[in-house]
Amino acid sequence: MRINRGLGGVWAYIRSAPGTYVWLAVLFVTTVALHQMSPDFEQHFLRQRSTNIHELSHNPVRVLVASAMWIDSGHWLPYVVLYSVFHAQAERWLGTPRWLAVCALAHVLASLISEGALLVAIQDGVAHRSAVNTLDIGVSYALAGVIGVLTYRIAPPWRYAYLLVVLIFFGRPLAQGPTFTELGHFLSVLIGLACYPLTRSRGKAWNPKETLATLRG
Image 1 (tube, rainbow, N blue to C red):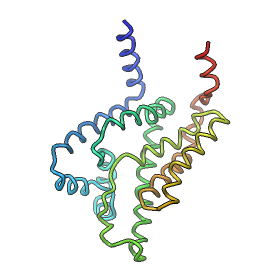
Image 2 (cartoon, rainbow, N blue to C red; image 1 turned 90 degrees about the vertical axis):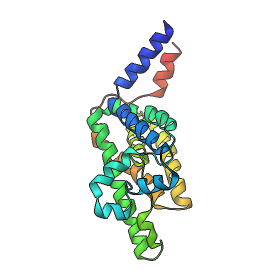
Image 3 (cartoon, one colour; image 1 turned 45 degrees about the vertical axis):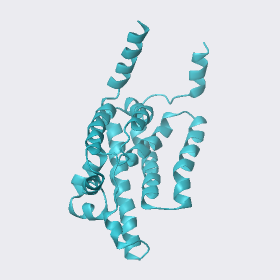
Image 4 (tube, helix red, strand yellow; image 1 turned 45 degrees about the horizontal axis):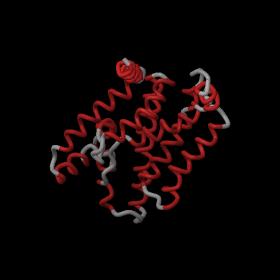
């Protein structure tokens, strides 16, 4: 009985965030496909679906969509945890259309701006010209954007502690050794924070203190 109740709870949670788990299902299929490829072919295949400068200049819409459907690490299970903790919570709170808007804005804008910065670096001689074909694929920009917008899901003063941790987590790598990827992640967080208008009228912010009090009975 407890097992059935637990499975029912899991299924209810999945149904409450359909976009999140459909996306995860797509990532599962594409990750399995990657494991069937040879290493050399995999790199060639992913580079054609990468939001690098070369592909963005030729097929911008195709690669912006395709790059969000693959995980270059080949490890799917960690994303199940990350999507359940962050994406599912954001989708349940904002609703699927607004959640998807945050994901799209973070993924697209961070990709374009970070690759634009890389292009400037190439033109200035700071980066090698071969960087136009750098592999830049995955779902991390959308995830960072969602992590950013979830700041508004938490009630003050807990909100500020959460925001500080997020800014340190994404800002420290950028400060230590800036690359276009670290820049993209940090920009994604800022884009998520800029999505505050989408969070209005989405109900009362979550207060961890109230949750602890409820658990204690």
